[in-house]
Length: 383
Figure 1: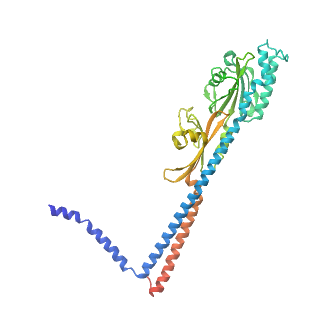
Figure 2 (figure 1 turned 60 degrees about the vertical axis):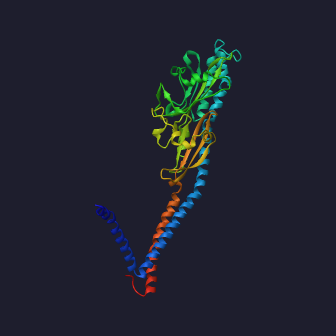
Figure 3 (figure 1 turned 180 degrees about the vertical axis):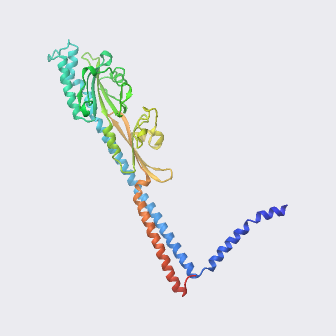
């Protein structure tokens, strides 16, 4: 029994020895000319492969810092542009109560419907105020709506100017269409504020009567309280900013193949290459961008911005950057930009492919040259 086991263990080594011996015999039977041709081909092929690989890696190491600097700068410029898009709304609502027409309208309301100083009726002041707001909204394409809402009658709108006229034109909303907004969160949060305080909402899809508006309109609300002469809250002024224009510019600002996102502090994607992932919470699909970009989600990166090297699933290095945008001086949003390795290394890959083609030609030329040299040295043809 032990002999059989020993035979079974040693039997597989025989073919291996024979294979090695056969290979050695084959090489030994080659002529000098054949060996010289093979050596030349292998040498040229190895040299070309090494040069191509080293060139690609050298370009990668040289390009990556520049890519990081570029996407860091670009994401900060996009963040600054987004801040500028909404900047005017804060000043408009903060100074609304100080406007002569707004102040006169409020004063007249508490004095029998007539302003005791200018002797104008509340209705006359209101008409002046509406004309001014119509001009303001018409001059600012980002403004979708400007409302003055009182605390009386369940938070009923005193006036509203929006872009629901023909072909999106600015219009004064008739009194019959004015609504009660007292139960809306933005009204309740704003009416509690003191003087010089501003409410800024998260960016969310606008809703009409509790239903998301179609087509979807990402909206930022900026509001401020308006006070009566006795210092008590009289109402609020609120601007609805249509963010579609800003978001469309952001989507079109990156190079082909690169990715850009706008994210909110609550984890929502506001802009995403896959539009189905935007505003997931309102669509019943909550998301957290922090789970996708944990290396950008620390308080330091979110507050100051950062750019760093990240590796894809294949281990290739790429770039990712985040830049903060403080909307209306209060609400945080982040611009994330990603430059995949395959995108910024595309020119290097093209050079590498060209090098391989040239290398193949060099191998063929080397083989031909080796044949000529071998025949010259040996004085006979290759077997």
